[in-house]
Image 1: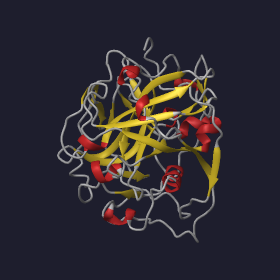
Image 2: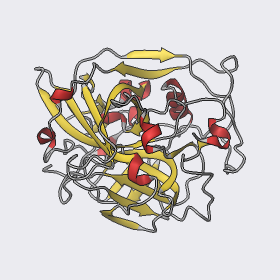
Image 3: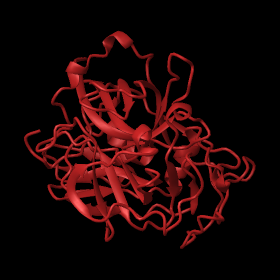
Image 4: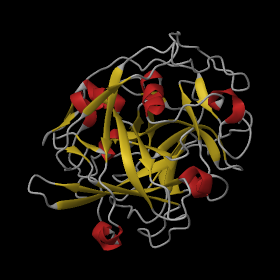
Length: 368
């Protein structure tokens, strides 16, 4: 990648956006300090839910296993040269206080989730615990306007959900902001090492992607920069097909916790940066105990990770012993020295609900 100003979408296949309705959450105000032992808000019944029109969903064509060739992805990243400084302003996404636990145990308290200190260097991510199986690399194939394949990479995280088959990533990893549409083919490799040379938990293909309509309708990229308030909603959920044994990914790897508007304390951002000086062949991280508010209500930390880390999870209350935390955002935009993530709130919760993530009890301490 010639320029380290990065994190925009890539050329993708033409597709029709299907705007869906029918997901909702209780009409509540932001909760302030959330109690992670006793959630202040729980999901509502279908009868109480408000109807919204916010989800762009796309069902991917059946994956062709014969099309997989890791050589297509050697040395690729995300297109660079796009400056995020001129993206539009948007209101903060309303906090809900809802959270679901990691699948490896109970809640992570503030004294346990000590994070990883302060580091902006993109150091190798420490191994161990739930992280080893739940964080990984995304390999995407898009079709340009001539129908030719274009190959790129992002990062993603298996998150605990009712569906047991969801990963979280960035919206621009599945939707092209230059106007061509959705990704044509997507694979996720948890625990990836060396451009998928090592696939300890297998390779999983995407069957559905869910993106906020605010992103698909009002996030744009041009030769000079990013534009639109839609960049405040640069996140997505991807449903994965079962493996050849009929297993869903969460039943194989476990799932990280996810939170939709709890106070973030220390932050840990994880991903596979592929632009120089990185090569995408190993998982890296940045961490902060003194993060800043991003322009659109999200998070900003000092970090030099480059293209390819987009979509990687941002966690609060990260417990190094468990390799687990609560995902509160995903890498969206950045400069040579900073990374930005949008805070997951009410819109993200409704997207998660539409993707099949919500079930009774998920936000009441079970998490599995």
